[in-house]
Length: 255
Image 1 (tube, helix red, strand yellow):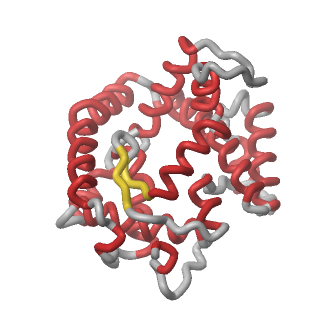
Image 2 (cartoon, helix red, strand yellow):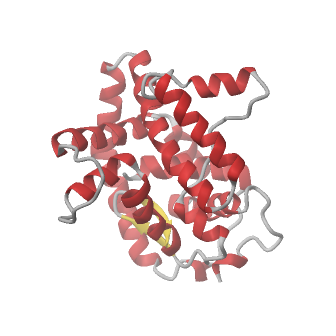
Image 3 (cartoon, helix red, strand yellow):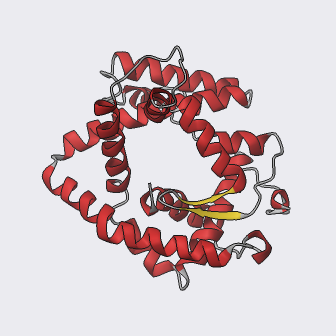
């Protein structure tokens, strides 16, 4: 995943937390990060965005929505697991309930019935946002220096480790793939890579499709796109780790 994964966090982060500049000490690898950032930009401009626009032009909107709901349901597995690890039992119960309802009555998550129930009643089973990077932050692990990862976009030392853990242990798609190709016998159901790889590719395209149009906001808001993305990333992640109750010293955890 490249800039399309980046933008969904960062554009939102800008509006949630403002655009205060991050101290440069949090970006000691700026030269390398800028090179990777430019690589991701070129990849997105020449590959991912054209593919996403082609997908949207060809696929009817109801099908696009069904695909998005399906992958959102898979992501609830990651969210629920990390809610449990953080001892947020209400959020874990909500996530588990979403998975149960959407997987059964929602036809493997293709229809997001859980969100409709939450919107129409007092039962709060709305979608949460948790990952292992947030879990580490919840227990006081510092973010560490800023990193721009090839394909994945903005991250940090802590969050990069979180991506690996979630991908291997919690994410249904990447977990199956990594375990199938690890050479280590596990109890995880064997799934043919001929199925997993296209599914992973479709999820990547779906994520990018959801961000079509968001680039315009980013382009208009930023004089230096790299700095804008970096600052918004730190602000957004800090807000998520602290459940929107950000301490007065916003970047104290990165020291």
